[in-house]
Structures are given as structure tokens and as C-alpha cells.
Image (cartoon, rainbow, N blue to C red):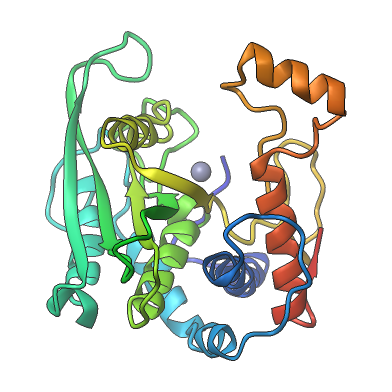
Length: 305
Ligand SMILES: [Zn+2]
């Protein structure tokens, strides 16, 4: 679980920071593309869009750096960390919520910001006792009342040390996942200045390292409220230069992970998939391909695969 301290950056870490600034742009371009794109994720010829280009230009590397420094400065953002002034998960969440609240769109009532609290019962594994956690949700309601589509961009704010149960040790989590939270903050800042027909949710989950607790709560809520959720773009370790699974070190590419065979596939769906050899054509895969197309069109010097 690699992370680095906010205070002492060596040269390699500085390079890492520079890389995720670039990656954040890539992820951002992909999101804009998706929002402006066709209602299905079929492969289409993507044209450079002037409004998207303007939004991409607005991404501010210095702001991104400041968000990450601030997030890492809370020492630890472990989901079970102490509630203290300037340290721990609560203080870090207050910082991000205050950031959303201060955006002009929030002040104008167009961006609704909530701390969505929920209780996670003890599970005998990574949750030793019942605990109250919270997601931060900033919702930019769509401008078209006929369009009920919802898009989520997310990242997890909680961090961890090598020992996942260490709730008090240093865990600045600059890359995992301060980088993702910074990306979502910057996307919210820029996108909330615009209007979109569909609804956008900027989501900062917690409890990821304790077993995806915040995401699970969000999924239950979306199901209970019958959201027409068409895409969720999660950002974890933007710009990390080494893959933990494959040890591949290639910091010139954006890696997009997407579901192939759906986890919640029905018998009939599985039969159709086998009959049509469509194991690589899930909506997630199509969305990932679409993002690749757009990033290529919008970010000329960017390599994506
Ligand atoms: Zn992570």
C-alpha cells in the first residue's frame, strides 16, 4: 500500500506528483466526454468539443497539488481514526465538505452538498465495533426535468497504513487516494459552473479499506431510491506509476478498469452472451472504449489504452 508523506518528497515522489496532475486531466477529459457524449456508449467518431476543451483548460495543477497536500496533512484518514482537530477522518471530511459548500454553485443552491451518515455494524474482521461513517455527496441536479440519468464520479477519502487495523499511525495517503479525491474536487469546481441535462454526483466515499463500506451504502441508496444510474467513474490512485498487480511501470498511460462479464448477470443474459460471443461488450467496456476515443480526441498528446 504505497503512500508518501506530505512533508518530505524525494525526486521520485515529485515526479509522481507531476504525473498525477497530468492523469487528473486525462480522467477529467474522459468524464467531460462521457457527459457530452451520446446517450449510449456505442463507438462513435468523437469530435473535439470547444466547451469540453475549455473545461479541460480550466484544470489547475496548483490547486490539485494544494488539495493533495492538505489531505495528506491530516496525518491519517483511517476510517476508524480518532476525531481530533486537524487530524483524522472527520477533520479531512470537514475540509472537503467545506470546499464543496464554498463553490459558487453551492451558494446559488444548484449544487446540493450533504454528509450522508450511516452506521456499519461490527463484522469481526475490519470493523471491530459498530461505527458511524459518512460519505460526502455533492449533487449537481440536471437541467432537463425529463432526463433522469445520473452520473457519479467518485474517490475514497479513507487511507491506511501497512496494517489495515492501525487506526492511529501515520497514513497520509497522498496517492491512495488523496489523488482521486483531489481529482473529484477539481471536477466539481469546474463542472458545477456549467449546466448539464443529466444529474452529476461528486461522491467521496469512506470505509474503502475496511471493505468498500461507503460504496456499499451508496449502492443501496441508489437502488432504494431507484436512480437511473448510467455510469460511475471511480478514481483510485490517479497517476500511480507502478501497478501493484503486475508490477508494470508505465507512467505515460491512463489505466481504465471496467467490468467485463457482469457480476449480476441473469441466466438468460449469460445464454445470450455465450450465443453472441459478447463477453467483451458489457456497458462498462463500451463506456471505457468511449472514454478512450474521447481522451484521444481531446488530449492530442495523450496515450491511452
Ligand atoms: Zn485506493
